[in-house]
Length: 366
Image 1 (cartoon, rainbow, N blue to C red):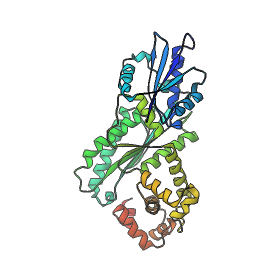
Image 2 (cartoon, rainbow, N blue to C red; image 1 turned 135 degrees about the vertical axis):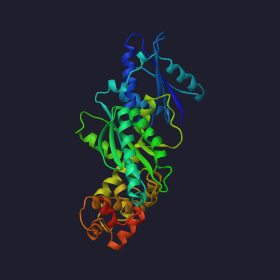
Image 3 (cartoon, rainbow, N blue to C red; image 1 turned 180 degrees about the vertical axis):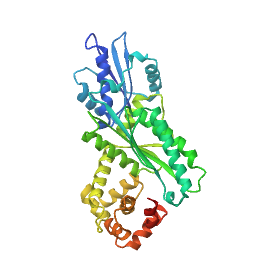
């Protein structure tokens, strides 16, 4: 995307610190306009503030500024990408006293939620001692890195957890470290296991708020639909790169989801939560709910989730069946019908194909 520099001539009023705070407010809303703020600096001699954006066009930057600090005169120009390196070096030279933490100026604290899960269709076919070792290592790494990055574990079981952090950088770096250090744990196993993560965030007043509960649900959903990657919202990615300008995300370990895809995923998962027990549920029923054609739904689900609609519906039902079996919520036949399968035998076949264990044996495990 093109690059733009936004310059503000401050004169004697308002104070430069106020302008810096206004620029940092951009970080909270930049995702709405598909912008990414790369940096901010202030020329003390000429009293000019400069801000660098990556954006689809000039209009996106203008609209962002109108929302946050329209009262400050500004001049936006498109710049050659060759000068970007020079600009970023100037920002790095600023002293720490001139840098402002976005969390210190937010009207409400930023909370970032990371959901983790160990997944494999061969997990339950492993020997009990191997699974025990996996659980022990997962707990060890989770506790170690949650402490290191000052996270709070709000929920944990054998193969999954949710952790909150006071900054985006802490959450993303914790997920990266977990991913990196969990790999040696499983690389010598014959079974294919992987650790996946979902990260979301919100500004809130307390952990009982609706916003917090929605952010936790979104993190869990991102983790659920992820494969072996760290799946994060675009807002989280933009905030992370704004907070950690010297860190470059390499490879494909982290994948971001746009606000439009988050809305699609939310509508899809909300619909599934209400109708997954319906035996007649099939892919064509999603069209009216999601407002997309059959081909559009297929493309978007393959892109975001990596599954076709029918495959996703079956996998979702089996995941819910696994929860019911774990909680001893009925016998095999009852759970088969409760989860939308036409017969217990077909359910058992699908369950074993998905998780590598018969539902009756799985229920005995718990």
